Length: 81
Image (cartoon, rainbow, N blue to C red):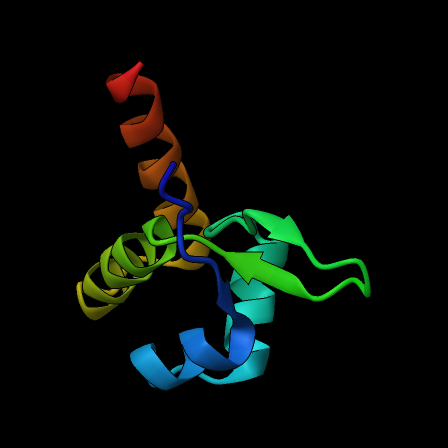
């Protein structure tokens, strides 16, 4: 059984160039989701976080607000169900 790779916030920062605070804010705003937490409470993210962050980046470049981006991402999620 293959286990999915989970990424610590530092790894997400390294791969995306985003700050810890930005990733934390996006998590609190439900733009991205943690996959789970370690026993000590550290957030872990799965591979999907990178696609979501790329979508956020593209939408921000088109001058969408975070609230608008959240609605767009929510609608995309509903369309996939």
